[in-house]
Image (tube, rainbow, N blue to C red; front, side):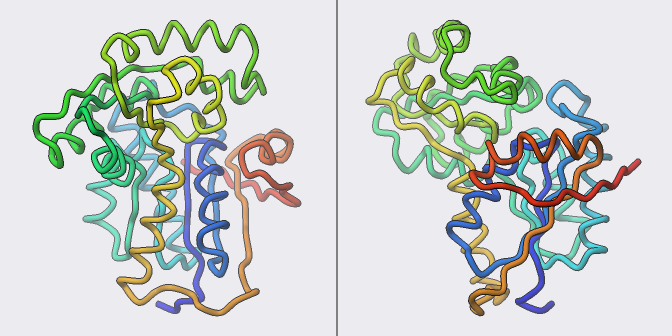
Length: 267
Protein backbone atom coordinates (compact mmCIF):
# COMPACT_ATOMS: atom_id res chain seq x y z
CA UNK A 1 0.00 0.00 0.00
CA UNK A 2 1.35 3.42 -0.98
CA UNK A 3 1.94 5.95 1.79
CA UNK A 4 0.25 8.54 -0.42
CA UNK A 5 -3.07 6.63 -0.33
CA UNK A 6 -5.87 8.29 1.67
CA UNK A 7 -7.11 7.42 5.14
CA UNK A 8 -10.76 6.41 5.34
CA UNK A 9 -12.92 7.84 8.12
CA UNK A 10 -16.56 7.02 8.79
CA UNK A 11 -19.29 7.99 11.21
CA UNK A 12 -23.05 7.61 11.47
CA UNK A 13 -23.39 11.26 10.50
CA UNK A 14 -21.37 14.43 10.85
CA UNK A 15 -19.90 14.15 14.35
CA UNK A 16 -16.88 12.30 12.99
CA UNK A 17 -15.85 15.52 11.29
CA UNK A 18 -14.43 16.57 14.68
CA UNK A 19 -12.00 13.66 14.27
CA UNK A 20 -11.21 14.77 10.71
CA UNK A 21 -10.61 18.29 12.02
CA UNK A 22 -8.00 16.94 14.44
CA UNK A 23 -6.46 14.72 11.77
CA UNK A 24 -6.06 17.67 9.39
CA UNK A 25 -4.33 19.57 12.21
CA UNK A 26 -2.09 16.75 13.42
CA UNK A 27 -1.52 14.91 10.11
CA UNK A 28 -1.44 17.69 7.50
CA UNK A 29 0.12 15.53 4.78
CA UNK A 30 -2.59 12.86 4.86
CA UNK A 31 -5.45 12.73 2.37
CA UNK A 32 -8.81 11.73 3.83
CA UNK A 33 -12.05 10.20 2.50
CA UNK A 34 -14.91 10.78 4.95
CA UNK A 35 -18.18 8.85 4.79
CA UNK A 36 -21.10 10.10 6.87
CA UNK A 37 -24.01 7.65 6.97
CA UNK A 38 -26.62 10.39 7.17
CA UNK A 39 -29.35 8.17 5.68
CA UNK A 40 -29.21 5.84 8.69
CA UNK A 41 -28.19 8.16 11.53
CA UNK A 42 -28.34 7.80 14.52
CA UNK A 43 -26.55 4.54 15.30
CA UNK A 44 -26.88 4.93 19.09
CA UNK A 45 -30.36 3.37 19.51
CA UNK A 46 -29.82 0.61 16.91
CA UNK A 47 -28.99 -3.02 17.69
CA UNK A 48 -25.34 -4.17 17.71
CA UNK A 49 -25.99 -6.48 14.73
CA UNK A 50 -27.40 -3.61 12.66
CA UNK A 51 -24.48 -1.31 13.52
CA UNK A 52 -22.04 -4.08 12.58
CA UNK A 53 -23.78 -4.60 9.22
CA UNK A 54 -23.65 -0.89 8.42
CA UNK A 55 -19.99 -0.70 9.48
CA UNK A 56 -19.04 -3.64 7.24
CA UNK A 57 -20.76 -2.05 4.24
CA UNK A 58 -18.98 1.27 4.72
CA UNK A 59 -15.59 -0.33 5.38
CA UNK A 60 -15.89 -2.44 2.23
CA UNK A 61 -16.76 0.66 0.22
CA UNK A 62 -13.79 2.62 1.59
CA UNK A 63 -11.47 -0.30 0.94
CA UNK A 64 -12.65 -0.22 -2.67
CA UNK A 65 -11.70 3.46 -2.76
CA UNK A 66 -8.10 2.48 -1.95
CA UNK A 67 -7.68 3.67 1.64
CA UNK A 68 -4.52 2.61 3.45
CA UNK A 69 -6.06 2.74 6.92
CA UNK A 70 -9.45 3.34 8.51
CA UNK A 71 -10.62 5.44 11.44
CA UNK A 72 -13.98 4.44 12.89
CA UNK A 73 -14.95 7.91 14.08
CA UNK A 74 -18.17 6.71 15.74
CA UNK A 75 -18.20 5.53 19.33
CA UNK A 76 -21.21 3.24 18.78
CA UNK A 77 -19.66 1.61 15.70
CA UNK A 78 -16.34 1.26 17.54
CA UNK A 79 -18.12 -0.45 20.43
CA UNK A 80 -20.08 -2.89 18.27
CA UNK A 81 -17.96 -3.43 15.15
CA UNK A 82 -14.26 -2.76 15.70
CA UNK A 83 -13.11 -6.31 16.62
CA UNK A 84 -14.96 -7.83 13.66
CA UNK A 85 -13.67 -5.22 11.22
CA UNK A 86 -10.09 -5.77 12.36
CA UNK A 87 -10.50 -9.50 11.81
CA UNK A 88 -12.10 -9.19 8.38
CA UNK A 89 -10.07 -6.40 6.74
CA UNK A 90 -6.35 -6.28 6.02
CA UNK A 91 -5.40 -2.69 6.84
CA UNK A 92 -4.97 -0.81 10.13
CA UNK A 93 -8.28 0.14 11.77
CA UNK A 94 -8.39 2.66 14.60
CA UNK A 95 -11.41 3.21 16.83
CA UNK A 96 -12.25 6.09 19.14
CA UNK A 97 -12.70 4.18 22.41
CA UNK A 98 -9.20 2.80 23.09
CA UNK A 99 -7.44 6.19 22.65
CA UNK A 100 -9.96 7.96 24.88
CA UNK A 101 -9.73 5.30 27.59
CA UNK A 102 -5.92 5.39 27.56
CA UNK A 103 -5.87 9.16 27.86
CA UNK A 104 -8.31 9.07 30.79
CA UNK A 105 -6.26 6.46 32.64
CA UNK A 106 -3.09 8.49 32.05
CA UNK A 107 -4.45 11.68 33.67
CA UNK A 108 -6.79 10.54 36.46
CA UNK A 109 -5.38 11.02 39.94
CA UNK A 110 -8.34 9.75 41.98
CA UNK A 111 -9.22 6.82 39.67
CA UNK A 112 -12.76 8.20 39.46
CA UNK A 113 -13.51 8.45 35.75
CA UNK A 114 -16.71 9.56 34.07
CA UNK A 115 -17.87 8.61 30.58
CA UNK A 116 -20.70 10.23 28.60
CA UNK A 117 -21.99 8.99 25.25
CA UNK A 118 -24.98 7.77 23.27
CA UNK A 119 -27.26 5.06 24.62
CA UNK A 120 -25.60 2.45 22.40
CA UNK A 121 -22.07 3.33 23.52
CA UNK A 122 -22.96 3.41 27.21
CA UNK A 123 -25.01 0.19 27.05
CA UNK A 124 -22.08 -1.61 25.39
CA UNK A 125 -19.87 -0.98 28.46
CA UNK A 126 -16.99 -0.59 25.98
CA UNK A 127 -15.35 2.33 27.81
CA UNK A 128 -15.67 0.69 31.23
CA UNK A 129 -14.07 -2.50 29.93
CA UNK A 130 -11.21 -0.64 28.27
CA UNK A 131 -10.58 1.62 31.26
CA UNK A 132 -10.64 -1.28 33.73
CA UNK A 133 -8.34 -3.31 31.48
CA UNK A 134 -5.76 -0.56 32.00
CA UNK A 135 -6.74 0.46 35.55
CA UNK A 136 -8.53 -2.45 37.26
CA UNK A 137 -9.57 -0.52 40.37
CA UNK A 138 -10.99 2.46 38.48
CA UNK A 139 -14.41 3.70 39.56
CA UNK A 140 -16.25 4.42 36.31
CA UNK A 141 -19.49 6.41 36.21
CA UNK A 142 -21.18 6.26 32.80
CA UNK A 143 -24.11 8.35 31.61
CA UNK A 144 -26.03 8.37 28.32
CA UNK A 145 -26.72 11.92 27.08
CA UNK A 146 -29.07 11.32 24.16
CA UNK A 147 -30.17 14.94 23.69
CA UNK A 148 -26.64 16.33 23.33
CA UNK A 149 -26.41 15.21 19.68
CA UNK A 150 -29.54 17.03 18.43
CA UNK A 151 -28.61 20.09 20.51
CA UNK A 152 -25.23 20.27 18.78
CA UNK A 153 -26.76 19.76 15.35
CA UNK A 154 -29.26 22.54 16.04
CA UNK A 155 -26.39 24.81 17.02
CA UNK A 156 -27.62 25.15 20.62
CA UNK A 157 -24.14 24.84 22.09
CA UNK A 158 -24.53 27.22 25.03
CA UNK A 159 -28.20 28.14 25.48
CA UNK A 160 -30.11 28.08 28.76
CA UNK A 161 -31.96 24.97 27.57
CA UNK A 162 -28.63 23.27 26.84
CA UNK A 163 -27.25 24.21 30.24
CA UNK A 164 -30.36 22.87 32.01
CA UNK A 165 -30.20 19.56 30.12
CA UNK A 166 -26.47 19.28 30.82
CA UNK A 167 -27.00 19.84 34.55
CA UNK A 168 -29.59 17.06 34.57
CA UNK A 169 -27.50 14.56 32.63
CA UNK A 170 -24.22 15.30 34.40
CA UNK A 171 -25.56 15.30 37.97
CA UNK A 172 -24.50 11.65 38.61
CA UNK A 173 -20.95 12.48 37.50
CA UNK A 174 -20.80 15.48 39.81
CA UNK A 175 -22.13 13.32 42.67
CA UNK A 176 -19.48 10.67 41.93
CA UNK A 177 -16.77 13.33 42.20
CA UNK A 178 -15.01 12.26 39.00
CA UNK A 179 -11.72 14.00 38.24
CA UNK A 180 -11.68 12.95 34.56
CA UNK A 181 -14.51 12.86 32.03
CA UNK A 182 -14.35 11.12 28.65
CA UNK A 183 -16.42 12.82 25.95
CA UNK A 184 -17.50 9.53 24.42
CA UNK A 185 -19.28 10.93 21.37
CA UNK A 186 -17.72 12.93 18.56
CA UNK A 187 -20.41 15.62 18.88
CA UNK A 188 -19.58 16.38 22.49
CA UNK A 189 -16.32 18.34 22.03
CA UNK A 190 -18.46 21.15 20.62
CA UNK A 191 -20.15 21.36 24.04
CA UNK A 192 -16.93 21.49 26.06
CA UNK A 193 -17.73 24.89 27.57
CA UNK A 194 -21.12 23.87 28.95
CA UNK A 195 -19.91 20.43 30.08
CA UNK A 196 -16.84 21.93 31.77
CA UNK A 197 -18.91 24.53 33.60
CA UNK A 198 -21.30 21.89 34.94
CA UNK A 199 -18.76 19.32 36.12
CA UNK A 200 -16.24 21.90 37.32
CA UNK A 201 -13.10 23.32 35.81
CA UNK A 202 -10.86 20.99 37.84
CA UNK A 203 -12.25 17.97 35.95
CA UNK A 204 -10.12 16.95 32.97
CA UNK A 205 -12.16 16.57 29.78
CA UNK A 206 -10.86 13.88 27.42
CA UNK A 207 -11.57 14.73 23.78
CA UNK A 208 -11.64 11.38 21.98
CA UNK A 209 -11.31 13.15 18.61
CA UNK A 210 -7.93 14.62 19.58
CA UNK A 211 -6.70 11.33 21.04
CA UNK A 212 -7.88 9.30 18.03
CA UNK A 213 -6.05 11.54 15.57
CA UNK A 214 -2.88 11.21 17.65
CA UNK A 215 -3.23 7.41 17.67
CA UNK A 216 -3.83 7.33 13.91
CA UNK A 217 -0.52 9.11 13.41
CA UNK A 218 1.29 6.64 15.66
CA UNK A 219 -0.20 3.66 13.83
CA UNK A 220 0.73 5.05 10.41
CA UNK A 221 4.31 5.65 11.53
CA UNK A 222 4.60 2.19 13.10
CA UNK A 223 3.30 0.52 9.92
CA UNK A 224 5.44 2.60 7.55
CA UNK A 225 2.35 4.24 6.01
CA UNK A 226 2.94 7.86 7.02
CA UNK A 227 2.86 10.32 4.14
CA UNK A 228 5.83 12.68 4.52
CA UNK A 229 5.25 14.58 1.28
CA UNK A 230 3.86 18.05 2.02
CA UNK A 231 1.17 20.02 0.17
CA UNK A 232 -0.52 17.01 -1.39
CA UNK A 233 -3.40 16.33 0.99
CA UNK A 234 -6.84 15.98 -0.61
CA UNK A 235 -10.18 15.65 1.15
CA UNK A 236 -13.37 13.94 -0.07
CA UNK A 237 -16.66 14.07 1.79
CA UNK A 238 -19.42 11.56 1.09
CA UNK A 239 -22.89 11.42 2.64
CA UNK A 240 -25.47 8.68 2.22
CA UNK A 241 -28.32 11.23 2.24
CA UNK A 242 -29.10 14.96 2.54
CA UNK A 243 -25.86 16.40 1.13
CA UNK A 244 -27.21 19.94 1.43
CA UNK A 245 -27.65 19.53 5.19
CA UNK A 246 -24.17 18.04 5.37
CA UNK A 247 -22.76 21.08 3.58
CA UNK A 248 -24.66 23.49 5.83
CA UNK A 249 -23.71 21.85 9.14
CA UNK A 250 -20.33 20.44 8.18
CA UNK A 251 -18.46 23.67 8.85
CA UNK A 252 -19.61 23.65 12.48
CA UNK A 253 -17.90 20.31 13.03
CA UNK A 254 -14.91 20.69 10.71
CA UNK A 255 -14.08 24.28 11.56
CA UNK A 256 -13.72 25.16 7.89
CA UNK A 257 -16.03 25.16 4.90
CA UNK A 258 -16.74 22.09 2.78
CA UNK A 259 -16.93 22.86 -0.93
CA UNK A 260 -18.51 19.65 -2.20
CA UNK A 261 -20.29 16.60 -0.82
CA UNK A 262 -20.76 13.44 -2.87
CA UNK A 263 -23.84 11.27 -2.31
CA UNK A 264 -23.76 7.49 -2.11
CA UNK A 265 -26.47 5.31 -0.56
CA UNK A 266 -25.45 1.92 0.77
CA UNK A 267 -27.56 -1.05 1.82
